[in-house]
Amino acid sequence: MSETTQRLLARVPITVRWRDLDAYNHVNNSTFLTYLEEARLAWLTGIEGEWKTVEASPVLAASQVNFREQIEWPATILVELRCAKLGNTSMSIDHRITSADGSRLHSDGNVVMVWVNPASGKPIPLPAAVREACA
Image (tube, rainbow, N blue to C red; front, side):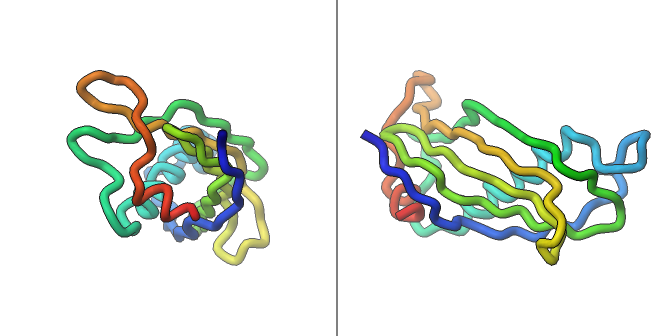
């Protein structure tokens, strides 16, 4: 059985880089996924305890991004992550990308991360450090 929460995991400011722009002079849609990855890694590396070991590593199992408003350069954005659901081997993270002051919503959505044994590729229980960081 899974637990459902809405715990704030992280608010990560990111400066938009010139290289993030596409031919339409706004941040390319694929770069949104990079921003989300950077925020998840900032959160994971900041938790106490081991979230990645030789026997346990997270993989992205699903990703949903709703594009709400373009991001233009120059800008600083804020990526917000919330724990939406904890399962036995996976977690669901809701995300939002807003302007630095929060007044503009650029995107929202959800990702599912599954912890696996890298050698076997099979799901394993969430590390205790991850579960505790979401409690």
